Image (cartoon, rainbow over all chains, first blue to last red; front, side, top):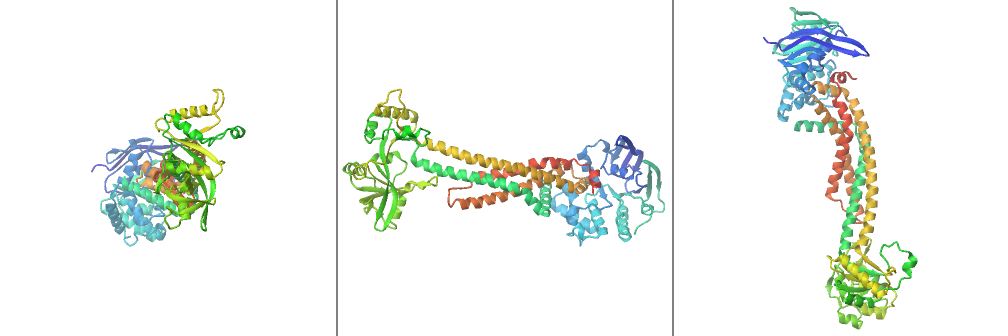
Length: 234
Length: 403
């Protein structure tokens, strides 16, 4: 199967006050469709930077990044925005919903940016919320929802443009364990339906939900292995 | 693109509504600016209309020969010692001028009118039959006096519209009698309604009587001017000719200065224009000032808004907003504050113009409303540009991390 994502000798260096910081220093990773990958590593290891680069929020200082055959490292800001909009679904640790908008409006936003007609937009947003079990919470604002519900809204938002990958950055980090299990269930469910999921976490237990675990340390890949004992959150 | 536009409007409205007081205070100077500019414009355009209406019946093609200039800066002593304008000049001008189409003396004096218990103060115009040709208004009902009535000194009169209403309420005045300074006159007709001149005084309160009767019954004192109707395509030539004839009549040597004045309504226009520009100038100054201050206020508040919503900008960028989309969103917000402020200012101005119209002619033209709203949009875009660029240029990662 051809690669969904290939990173080749990716480097990301920062100049912080005259000192060169090598956040990523030569990363090679290929990701195939319908993989469930955990990116592990302690804080400062470079896993966030890697996630930002995979998520097209950041561009590498060196190396090549192909996303479905397109050369991401050569793209300008607007092209990157378009990739983020259509191909990547973000799920953040802090949910990052728009506080003054209802759940439905939050989920609608990516569709607005992709120029989907209004009627279709509402329909997709509604069914996406129903699919994460929030059909009865469409008109609630984030502050009227629990943490778990908020994260589910964020997942619904990530799914509306049927992205190629779902990029979840510590999705359970701000949740109680019960809500955390719910979210992991949804992610597993998405995986079984054929989605590609990249989970960034520093918790081993959470990382074990994936079928492949990549460990980053000091800007380099320390380990990249298949996870035989994948936890199937059912 | 459309849905994006509406989305921007929606975000802007949400944002403004969630900061009502802040938005109102920010928009206040825009409100004041737009209020000033529309109110000034309304006043000036009202003045213009009133002025044009008033100018119409004075006639641009009428020269008025009198002792002094209407709006002259002449030395008072010099003017005071000028000889009076005499009635004989009328015939002399008529005989010598080849341009003059009509020449009418106007002997003007104040008088009190009475009829039974009713009374009024009025200006009496003693003139000849040619008077009608020197004005652009005519007889509404009845008829003007004839040359015969003029020569014979008949005590007949034409009433201004208001005079007729005052002395003959709810009745036809024609053929009825009234008194001017105690002397009985018969009403021949009523003049057309003029309205107020610049809203200040009106020719509707005048009474026109034959010059014959004027000379016989009232003292010669009073103010005499001679109205000369000239062809409107030969204004300058006619004016030169009239000056020449008057100098001849007065026997002035080439070195001597004119000891009379030939006035034209243009003089009114000049003085009017200078008043208009003064009002307009002050108005524009206040407007620009408050719009600049307002614009700075909006720029300031937009910077705050961008700062406050850095995280939101990050999220929007992460889920696919391009730079232009973020730019549009914030520009829309700045513009919206201005447009809402502009609309509030405009409504206030409209209400005020209705109130002012009770005392002074004022009408708000459509173009003014459109201009003022365009002006608010312009201020909004200008003031919003730098903060919006700042928002659009934010790095998504930094913005997402911002707390």
